[in-house]
Amino acid sequence: MRELAGKVAVITGAASGIGLALSRRLGADGMRVMISDVDEPALADAARSLMADGIEVATTVTDVSDPDSVDALARATLDRFGGVHVVCNNAGVSRGGPSWEIPLPTWNWVMGVNLFGIVHGIRSFVPHLIAQGEGHVVNTASVAGLVAARCGGPYSASKHAAVAVSESLYHDLAAIGSPVGVSVLCPGPVRTRIHESFRHWQDRFGPRPSVQDSPAVAEWRRESAVMVESGLDPALIATAVRDAIVGNRFWILTHPEYANSLLSRYYGLIKADTPCA
Ligand SMILES: NC(=O)c1ccc[n+]([C@@H]2O[C@H](COP(=O)([O-])OP(=O)(O)OC[C@H]3O[C@@H](n4cnc5c(N)ncnc54)[C@H](O)[C@@H]3O)[C@@H](O)[C@H]2O)c1
Image 1 (cartoon, protein in one colour):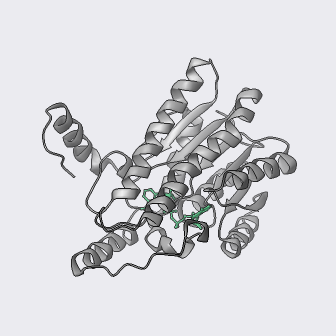
Image 2: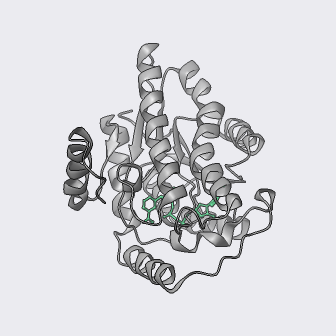
């Protein structure tokens, strides 16, 4: 999609971090933005700050893990703006630990938001984009969707699946000759609140699990938080996404320092070697 001005973007997980930066970037490029998030007060704050920048914005409280909620978001976007062109399936949560210690509700929650949030976004929006003959889908995965690391079980599983779903979507659209574009965003650490994801637990996944971390896992959690807090500015990620939409590029790799990890992973795979992180 070469022209963004005057068109409509919908962004999930838009109340914070990468989603908020994406909303600001696309809004600054003249798009009208439907921002959605499960966190209602933070969503209202985000809308106020975008409007203060002169961006035309509407809000819908959405839980992306719930298909009806994402359908309602699609209806609200079409009702409000009469169309939709860019769909950023961005909402995500993270919770790690040794795979055998992570409670089942935590696995379900991370997969429900990170994978099924994208699946629901595809099912609710892509038919409109196909019918319109124009549009672009951006799915937020992670570098954790390309290489798996310690304590990353559900997060990495959800992000690998997000990459796979995005690649299949790309092939499915190409197979019907649709001009709708697809990108998958695979960042390394970005300065957001992702490490505080437990603030968004949804009760329909059961009571929020409370787990006593071992000292080693507590140390891993602290190190992960430091990595995120010293990560890239979300505004840089948003610019990379905008450029990929306009340039119709599939892969959005924002952290070149992970190139060696990717090479080692795939080289080791071809050689049937042991996994490397
Ligand atoms: N920050 C990083 O280092 C990093 C790296 C790679 C990928 N990502 C991915 O970027 C995306 C955005 O995360 P972020 O880093 O900006 O974190 P963040 O916590 O700052 O923002 C995530 C937003 O998603 C919302 N959210 C959570 N559950 C939701 C649900 N069920 N429905 C709707 N909204 C929900 C939260 O309220 C929050 O506003 C996620 O998919 C994350 O996995 C982040």
